[in-house]
Structures are given as C-alpha cells and as structure tokens.
Length: 612
Image (cartoon, rainbow, N blue to C red; front, side, top):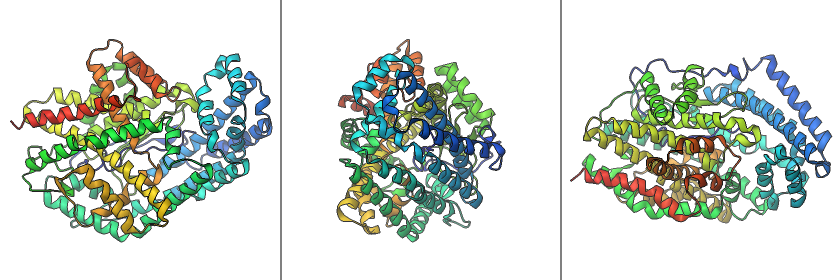
C-alpha cells in the first residue's frame, strides 16, 4: 500500500540550508480535490464503505483457499488486492496530506486518526494473504507464473513476501500486530509531529516556529546563527524527556517485534523492505566512514579558513560563504531554473514536471502549523503525486524543489506499474530526486559568470552532498548504536542518548569543529528516527548511485535518456542489480561506492585548487 509519506532529508539538505525573507511571488497551495472535495464529501463515505465491503469479500472468497488457486484465479485475487490498496491509499493520502498542511488543527488530526483506525480495522481480515502465500511451496508458485504471463508480472511481489517468510509469526499474532498498529508506533509518530509543530523559539524579538529558527542557521550574520543554535538547544533541552520517551518506546517496541520474528538485527526489516542485501549497505557505510577525512574533514577545514575562524561552531556548518550574496530566488525564477535544467536533459522530463506548478500539486509556502521540511507523496496510481516544500527563496531551496520534483517525475513514470509494483524501494527512490538536483546544479554551474560564483556553487553542492552522504551515514550509525543500546542496556536516559549522538558527530564532522553545550540534544528533532528507522542510509545510497549514473551520462552514452526513463518506469518491479545493469554499474561491488565518493572528493579538489 502506497500510503507512507516519505520525508526528504528534513532539516539538512532541505531545511537547514533554506533562507528567509524577500518577495517570493505567488507560492502555490495544494488542491486536494483530485482525491476528495472535502472530509465530509459523500465520496469519502462511499470509499470507506467500498473498502469495508471489499476487504470482507476478499477474505470470504480467498481465506484458506490460496493454495488451491490456478494461475487465472491467482491473477484475479491479486487484482482484487490491488483495488483494495488503491481505495485505502486514496483515503489515507487525502487524510495525511490534509493533516500535514496544518498539523496543529485538531479536526484534521481527528480525521486522520479516524481514517487510520477504520482502515486498520477493515483490512485486518487481509492479514491471512501474505501468511498463506508464504505457505505455498516455491515450485507450486513458479508453475503458476509459467502458466500465466500476466500473473508473472507480479512475481516481484511474491518474492518480497517470501523474503519475509523466515520472520513470519502465527496468523493470530500477525492479526494482533496489525490491529495494534494504530495505537502503537503510529500514535507515537503523531505525538512527535504535533509536539514539534507546537514548539516555539525566541532567538530574537519574536517567537518563531522550528522551521523558521532552523532557517536562521544559514544567515550571513554569525550572531543570529549563534542565537538560533542556542535557542534550539534550550527548547530541545526543555522537552528532552518527552523525546527520550518517544525514542525509548519506539525502539523497545521494535526490539520486541524483531525478537518475536527472530530478525537477526534491528536493521534487517529495513533491508528487506528496501530489497537490498545487508552486505551492500555495510559496504556503503564502511566506504563513507573511511572517506570522512577526505570529504567532510577536508571540506570543513577549507570552510574554517574561508570564514576566518580558529574553530567552526555548529552554527557555522551551513553558514553562507563570505563571498556569497544574499540573493533571493523568487518562485517564478525557481520554476524556470528547474524546468530548464530538466528540459535540457530531455524535454519529456520538463513536460512531466510542469503540471506540478499549474495544477495545485505543490504546497510551497511556510505557514503556521505546516509540516516542516519537504517531501513528495505518490498518493495512488490513478491520481498523481503531491509535493510539499517550505520555500523561502535561497538558491538551495531551488535544489530542494529540483529534488522533490525528481521524486514526482519518478512517481508519475512508475504509476503505470499499478499499486503493487509502482512503489520504489528506498534505496532507489532517491535516484530521480538526486539526479534532478544534479541536473539543476550542473546547469547553474555552467552559467556561472565568474570563478567567485563558481566557487560558491561548488561549495554549496559539496555541502549538500556531505549532508546527503556523510551526515546521513552518521545518522545511520547513531540509530544503530541507539537500538543496540536499548536492546542490551534497557531504558536509556537522556544523557545516554546524548552521548550516543555526540559519539558520531565528532567523527563525521571532523576536527575543524567545536561543539557547544546543548548540541548533544539535536538528535531530538530528526523525524526519520521516529517515522522510518534506518531510512537515512537511502540518501547516501541514492547519492552514490546518482554520482555513478551521472558519470555514465557525461561519458556520452547515446541511449542514456532512454535507459534512464526505463529505469524510472520500472518502479519497484526490478531489483537494483537489474536496473543498473544497462548502465554497466553494480552496487554490490565495493568500488562502486568509491566511484561515487570520488565525485565529491573531486569537487573538493577543485575548491582547493581555487585557493592557489
């Protein structure tokens, strides 16, 4: 079911680097009427009733009988399941997107919770499906695929289900976990979101939201950056016991379920969901950590010199360079810049992206109660994706727009696969977004009027890549340590969680930094740790993959655009090895990651050469 709203790299590439102020033009709002006209629209009641009936009918027709179906019967069953996913996905997409527009609105939160509870209740009878599928012998399923080519198209779905077979519980326990989910992790997620949306900060004269306060960390004025950082630390500190409770509870809940399922590690479920081998992720992680000295350590030493400081403080991490102007990019110009970059690559890409601007598919402005950061949500395959931004006009906000539109293009192209096959594993879901950023960056770099502007652009891109690769792998290491400590040591105090956070920060950012008192609490606002455990390595995976892909593109492969669109159209129907093979790439080869990291290192080489 495609109902999860995936976060972008919140508060990093998307938000820490955003700007503020200026006349931005008319920023678009979402028009959700392509889903439903209103929460009390008769179509909402109609679809809830349809879903309830469809689930009951599905269970009555197929429970206890899957093993006896012939190929045609199994195909009919799969299509019925797909229709259920479409109904549930449309309802949850509408409720979720509407909630994220104003997370502080009690009526919207109530509507989302009621939808979630009803859909959980209605779909409980479907739990048997994966359990029975996994009891069918492999040779029996393979014979069905051979007998019907239309059914064989869905083979990846069965393979993913069968990958979970060793960790499957009894039918009763699986039903219990399904029923309990609405008041388990989902409830803690909502508590976290609502708490974050209600926090206020006063670094200067007026109260600001979390989003606006984080934006001050990229101000030219160093005093303002410091004031923002210290105010963030103060407010996080005042709320730290609540955030520790959220993390302790979710980590323990996960440990209990993993233990019952006999999952070997806390990361196993994420790797299975991503259809990626653990050794591939570890090769990526190890390559990035080994590269810290030649990437983040080296770059931040350059930045320390540019800023004329003995030591960088944490509020200098995303500071503009001294030679950087405080240019504000209004919305019409941002649109033009991204669509031009997409169109230069292939006019079809710009054509797919254009409706997002014209048809209410983007919600761009910063508004009270709105979810922070940025994301692209695919909704369902017979509607279209929606993009959320908090656009404040800095050039890097343009990069965020390019990133999220990349997701949107990917989701549009993959929609033809249908509900069950369109959703792309997280490791590949970042491909089109990061590629869209790269296209936009390269176009801006080519148009830079002088070396000073080129230096600013290169430095900005390196910082974004460090945020996407180095910082996200540091986040991954923090999560690994947090879940291991919760498993072996029991309840963790705030001080213990703080220590785990700091153990990865110095290692990843390097000796150029000093860490202020209070920075140890900054783990508390990262939403990925709450919503999507171990999600973060997907950013590094996507960045490394795109760097390698872009190298193939620059080498002049005449069929590159066709291969690229074919890859995006595949959605989740193919494994990463199969998708990358036409480009001559293999993510299971450790040298693959070195190639991607080498692109970042090469940009730092260019920056160092400009110092001579």
